[in-house]
Image (cartoon, rainbow, N blue to C red; front, top):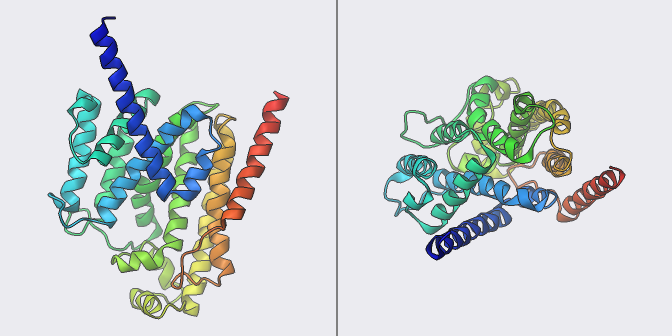
Length: 321
């Protein structure tokens, strides 16, 4: 290797390390439960998980927090992100140009996709679901008539993320055998978010709870809007939320056995994430379903206690091997 080639390699390594640091900062700032769970992973896996999270986050921000100076609007920005990622995978990251944070995330993501041989289709599926959140696009949906319709949205917004993660985490069975449980866990996390964030979603003109399930309890869009204005959860909404929480817990029950299909070294992290996310449902119940008055959050001391318990169990398991 010539001195020039060596220097170029060092520069690329430094650029890549900087890109992964940006992803880590995004994960630490925005994904408290997610970031804590990644601390239980072996250090070599963490950057890839941070890259996957950061990509999902910047796309989510394009949809939910569009900036007035965005050149292409949310729909155009999503198209641009997809184009940039395709270019990064086909031509190399040196061909990617754009805002610094986004460029760094795409550099790290492209490296993660190659390093772990993640199917790019999972990212196109994810972006298609995000287009369903953008008013004015052919895919836009502000609400969902049935759970089947909502799960089609979650196939891209949540299940696809579980499938992206699977090659990074590693499995003790062929990846295809672990995919249904990974997809179900992604959906379980997403539905928990929808139940927790119903007020914020209403502010954006969206309802991510199936209309037919709500209607069975006498709940409709106008009633939800009234609850949002008053900050009070109507009794009918309480009953509907209790029903949907039960559906959500069924998803966790379907997904959690799949954790045992993962590499033993990553199971504590994923089990921690599942326990903490399911804990949000308990917080909603403990607050008497007051989802319009505040955001349900698992207290920090509880998050740390659960993570510490899983870490201790994992350490004991490794000591016995």
